[in-house]
Amino acid sequence: MTETIATMRWRALDRDGEDKCRLAHLNGGYMLVGHARFRDGAGWAALDYVVRVGADWKTLSADVTGTHGGEDVAIKLDRDGEGWTLNGTPQPDLAGCDHVDFSFTPATNLMPLRCLPDVGRLTTRAAWLRLPGPVVSPLDQSYIRERGQLVSYSAEQTGSATQLVVDANGFVTHYPGLWEADV
Image 1 (cartoon, rainbow, N blue to C red):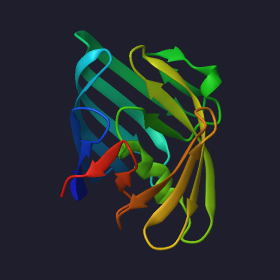
Image 2 (cartoon, one colour):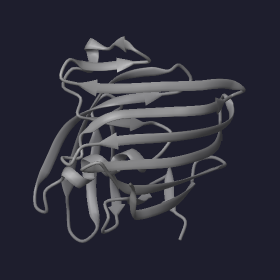
Image 3 (cartoon, rainbow, N blue to C red):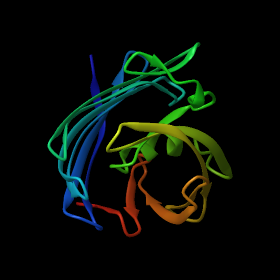
Image 4 (tube, helix red, strand yellow):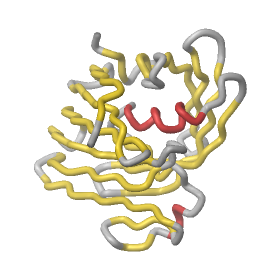
């Protein structure tokens, strides 16, 4: 049985698009269910995603289905004691990844943000999914809690660094230049 904890809706700032998701309790852990709709260089995308995490907020599995640029998308990522698989194929390069990061939504920042201490920093590695592809590779991330609702974020492989605004549930409400909560 699932119990909704929180919901969020965003609008894209860099393209036509929106995303909405729901966070719920599931079997001693959590489940994030979302629906992203946007236009990018490949065309229109309609992607539905589910991320299942344990009580420690670390990813157990994730699914992405839908269409992107006229092509069907069906992605299943699983993580267990043996490592990660992508559609059943082992992904040894993802060793050490605790979370997923979907490039098309701010929703997946939630899990590392829920692991971030009230004071201090979190350095983590995510299985970074990019489309078209799918391409999945490690993404080394750093989150530092600042004053108020601000969190400094950086990603080593992309060289990006910004200040996120985060709500009490851990959802990003403002990702400069990319996403803003639609309240």
